[in-house]
Image 1 (cartoon, rainbow, N blue to C red):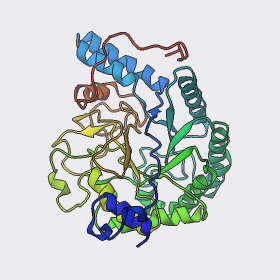
Image 2: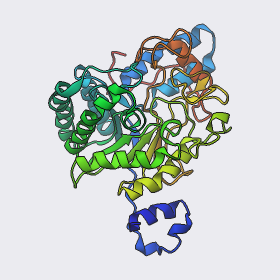
Image 3: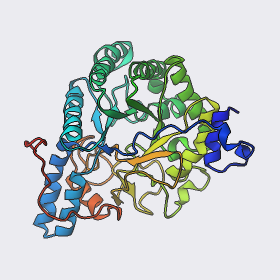
Length: 390
């Protein structure tokens, strides 16, 4: 096992690392989230006005003030189509203004999500690109456009999530003909994205699903091997910061109650998923660093099985920010903007994927983690450099 692997395991206190001296380990990488604030999406904040109005209409000022807190909380911004690339421009502009005029160092959270034959196993989030022609367009019209924008934003720090669910489907769904056909195209596509986004200020986190999907004992080594293959396809000098788990899912970081359906899974929450997967990633020469999506966390007993993934209820807003609970975690983040529907499934009344689901957001606020404290005022926060349209 490599020295870097032993050093990483030493963070977890494993016996295998006990023989290592402290000075044998290289200086740890600087966590890009330390000292920075995830950029607020003003477009998302505008959507939350509907939720605020709902609480005011119900004379629920406590939860209305929680909405005001959420409106000033950083979320990742998705660019799920070629035509949606303008979202990158708006987010970069907002982050630059906040950093320069607001005096707060930013980390811009973005999601690259347009791989050909996306969501091959479920279809609720199917995209615009398919097959070899989709691969060409993905490279020329989508990824290259990302690279161009990031090359002109060296003054900012970025955390970019790479293609949610893609590796999950590669590892477990080759038995679906559509997924098997898509796999080599998606591997090439993601490798190209990794290669093109190699900037010093850009921190890449490859999506590896969640503990209920890839955290089973048999899937752990396969997941690391699949990730390693793609990174090697991108070239010997390709660097990634790490991996992201639980995107658009509902698993808690540290479960208060272990659900019955997790009985035989070593990754029964996302904390344990990161710890279980880390040694396999190290064996592939990959960094065992993680960010964990906690935008929506199911309440105990909300699911009968892990396969329930769509607008799960009851659920609440999860915790965000740095954590000392696991040294492998860069940050708990909100990747999936809470309130956006997973699709026309799950909680009754759910709209299409990506559409605003106000009743669901009301529930998330009502069940929010205790760290989501109400704002002092019902007035919406404003700054002169913020856009006025929302």
